Structure formats: C-alpha cells, structure tokens
Amino acid sequence: MLITSPWSSAAVKSVEVLEGDGGPETIKLMALAKSEQLGSQNKTEKHKVEALDRENFTYCYSIIEGEVLGTTFEKISYQVKITALPLVGSVLKCTNSYFTNGDVDVPRTRSKPGNRR
Image (cartoon, rainbow, N blue to C red; front, side, top):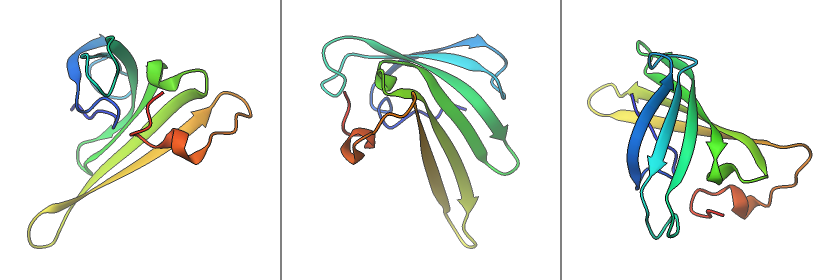
C-alpha cells in the first residue's frame, strides 16, 4: 500500500523499501520528482509504517526524514482510514499529527500542506 503525504502526492518519482516487508516498522525512501511545487531540485522523504490493518482499512505512517521536516518538525504522522458507506462508496478520513523539535511555536500557515518551506 502506498499512500503519500499531501506534499508529495503530485510528484512521486520512486519508492524504495529500505527495511521491512511493507507492514509495521517498514522504512521506505520516497524520491520526489522536480516540480514547481517542490522547487527546482529533487527531494526525498523517509517514511516509517506505524500500523497497517487490512481488515479495518487503516494505514498509519510517519515522515521521519526529509526536507519537508526542516528544523521545525521531528516527524509528521498520518492516519488514513477508509470506511464503506451502507449503499455505495466510501469515506476516506485522514488525520495528520505534527511533532515539533522541542518547544517550537508553529504558525498555523506553516502546517498547511500547500505551504511548503
């Protein structure tokens, strides 16, 4: 299962599994292609799978390394849950958690996906 962060969803170049089998504790290196959103240079993100529940359609992962973290964030975690609707379709719920390095005050605009720094 590959679910990307809002920052990288438009520009994934490649994904390499560095450790693990795709389940919890797996470490993946994601290379992001050059784009206007990312600037002129290639970027990378290292993801860690925190939890994977195929029966309940839940996937949790964290960005643990990469330019998106800068010096402000220790990690950014994502919990994705898909719930079937009674008749047709489904609901996708994403919860993002931002973990800062120390007592850093993060302005509200800094934590929005479209505001890449």
